[in-house]
Image (cartoon, rainbow, N blue to C red; front, side):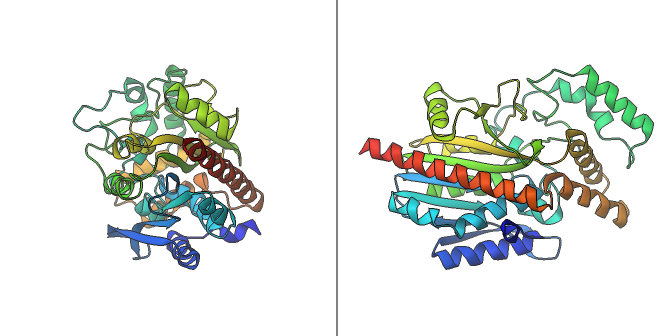
Length: 362
């Protein structure tokens, strides 16, 4: 039953999202991307608002920040649009804003990065200042992205040696972000991307009336199979206590050693601090595990290699894209059920938490 919410392509996911939002009576907006999708289709960051535009509490759920991670995020959003929870939320004064496909180009073209090989969760930073240096990444870049694909046994041996040399480096770590290698992994870009500008505009339009803003950004690719780790960034103690009271003691700060997530610079949810300064922000990165880390990393390496070799043979390019898709979306019913069940539980907790906060204010 749960599998019916998962789509096979970005185009299908977008169509189903918009149709469900219309049936729900949501206020819909389309932010069209300047490029086309893999099937020649229109690309857009679409939003659906359910509830009052001036609600004191807003629950924002976003999908597809990392391209094909959108297969799962889109399914979570589609399931929510067909759930009675939305009616219960609006009755309690909580509006729900769904942001579909933050990175529509990557979602359609099966790229974790965007059209400029930018990792969008490294792009939301202050470009008036230099991006922090990442000497850890510098030590492994050449081994991560070899000159040819697929890598040879010698290439893999060099990578293993390089990764062993930086083991334990977390601040910054290999995946914390870097601004030097345009064809590398975890590239921040040197200016705000289309998605960055669009998300900020969405926040300005929909987030400046609320007093409480909860934001769950849905991701896949790290951690145990099907488990959704509740990742919390570095925030003041009152914000952490609010998040723990809503979502439980298994919430993990990204600064903790046991977190599956790196400490990153330029995270999407931090944009709400600039764009919605009046609101108390309670953010979470929801990270679902897929394949073993070594397989996910190999898929990312292939994607980075392909970004630097656009003239690669079509069959090889297709093979790399498929590996990226499989690294971030497991096409198995048990996995799909785990994703939707955990998201629904978190949606209930978020709505309850927001409703309790605004009740206290009244």
